[in-house]
Length: 259
Image 1 (cartoon, one colour):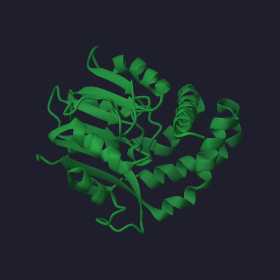
Image 2 (cartoon, one colour):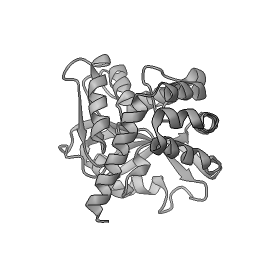
Image 3 (cartoon, one colour):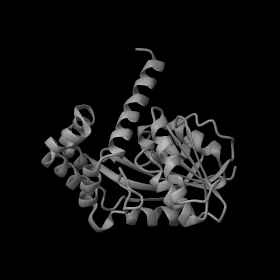
Image 4 (tube, helix red, strand yellow):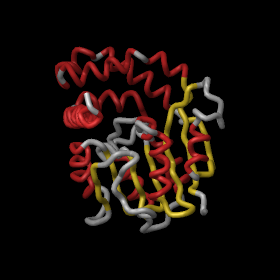
């Protein structure tokens, strides 16, 4: 399979998942049960996004009214739209999936006035956006999936104005020492960022363990509602719940160096 064929197949896989999950009452119900009073219903997340995380991202970005926020791996747009409204910012969302982009655009009027948000299909390392077009960037549970993390961070550096901040969630294997070549700290430094904060992503493991348990408990119902392919993808992920013990769930805040 060529690289282009692989990319198309990955995009189509995400398209199917977004289309099916977006329509699912059961998936939302289980997500809400897993997150409990941390569940931001209006955001409608299919990620680790919770009230605590939204507050930390707002504090980390430090945007001014009418600044532009870039949401990398925006999915259906919920976290980015909520953040842009909270910060009185403009929003540009980028995602690999055309279906996700379509869904995000349809949700936009619930959060922002016309012309305050735009969404486009793009890659982590090739967004097609102009240099210096954003004052802040966010990526929730998405940036670690970039095929080339170093190239993705260089692209964010290109897109941010000097002093602009990137706030993102990522898992890091506990065997990786901060500052060594495989660490996010090192990748950020190489890409031209100063690390301002590196903190535990509170609630992450707790929420995902509960969610995985609920998926397994409702396996037959998920297959009936989502179809075999999408449901089996969730159940395969849930079967690897023990891998959470090997990783630290982290939240990073990094500032683009002025030079």
